[in-house]
Image 1 (cartoon, helix red, strand yellow):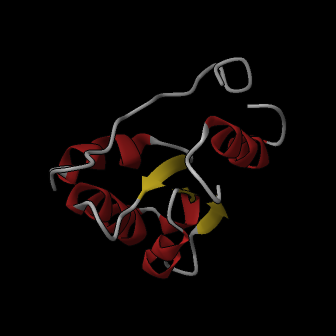
Image 2: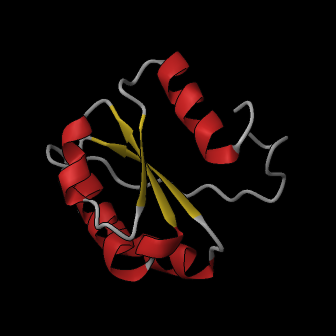
Length: 104
């Protein structure tokens, strides 16, 4: 991934807690956001991160749905969504290739 985007910054969104507020500053500084969304309907931390992105950065966010397509209903229309259709490495790599326009 770094070879495609050498200036990429990675922030981890919580999966089991709802402490997504720590992401606010990173999101505000980012030119674009790629959020690997892992079952936001099941994990409160993922839901909180997605809600934060929907509220503050929907137009500059690409949500990559990992494992569950059901999270699409949580994404606003202004947000770009790519469904990885699974959580295996090959699925995630294919989705990220779509996001970054090349090999992930």
